Length: 559
Image 1 (tube, rainbow, N blue to C red):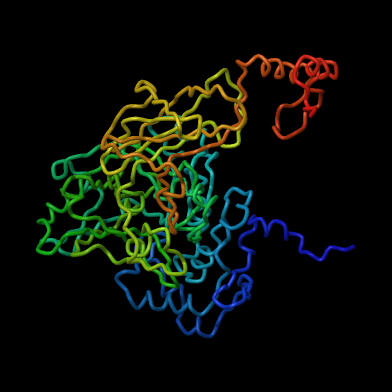
Image 2: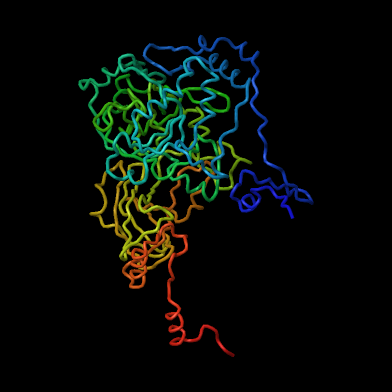
């Protein structure tokens, strides 16, 4: 008999290739299977694109020394022309990385969509993808895990995330929303306008003048709201745009010492806010795309945050000028907020009445109710994500690892809480969360208002076989983490704040039989790893087997 099933039928039935599953329409009397949409290939209306004009003239370099920067916000007609170009062609669909296996590559995702958009607009954007990747290779650690090549999203491997309490610049995670503009310091300036008494422009030397602006130095943890997103994806996939929903693990967090000045002081130098000014709109020089629209990167922070001296204009990171990939020559650092508000390549600040309606603020970084999804989502249904809730993660061991130990499993990781709160206690459990051990204070890094605490702990674990190690944090306001990932799931896959769980295979060498068996593996040269390989030697002699049953109850009971 010849099988007629497709080769991946079993995988599809078991949900291991979810993107190929048909939808089931059960609104009628019969169930109808609707096959997944098939992309029909790229199209391009050359005449319509040509009618827009020459991109090398329309989208040319605007300012000397600002490579890769196009000003969109001042020129609605320029935005409209770019929109026509994008609408006159179709592009490949977004890469699937949730409902099927994640690619075994580094970079994990190439960012094809975004590269094609930049090339479609052309002009000053043509070289941005290549220039950005060269900057990554030049400035980041060779062991970085590249989740998305363009726009660049990358995190350090787990073994290096907490190797130091202050993250070295080459190992600090990067979450970019666009390409990296290459801006010369001497050609750069910052404009502060909108609802201020006296709009002004500043050079970097102006801002560094300590006679006008007192220097500010802060140790700050920045965390992406997508940190630990892979845990949500693994159980319950959600929105799958590779840029807002990159499949972050536990390394999208880092701590650095920033030097700059308080934004509050600069606003004061402009005569302060005038009536109605309640929010500060922050402009980044990168180009951002959303639904065939093109724009600069814009978000806003409330004046109350600025007034508290919790928004820094920073030019130095860990004793060095800002790396290009982290926003050179000037970036914003918003204390205790998600990383998306800490705008890089800052070139304008505008005082406004209400929070910005730019897409990054109004349509992204929203926390939805669990019944909200692609079928019914509206931006107004989401809570705007600003401060990060308390969270923690285990950096070692890794899930599915075999750990040979003497009754204690050596663990290490990080804990963090946003909004000016700090980790007060870190707890670990080796039994899935029924009993908890507190990490001794001496095993936690120093306590600071705006930073994480790294930790190490030898977790008591007598049992063997598969165990679930759980980590949770309590901050100084007694906030803690929900115990299960389901409680944290949301359509945007943001803020994975649930207790971090890993499953490891415990081999306790302090038990006599286990110690004997490990010696046997070594004596015979047989591998213990991979765990699932059968043993290459008898685990019990026939004589021992018979002797046991002579001395104990029979294996089968006679009536």
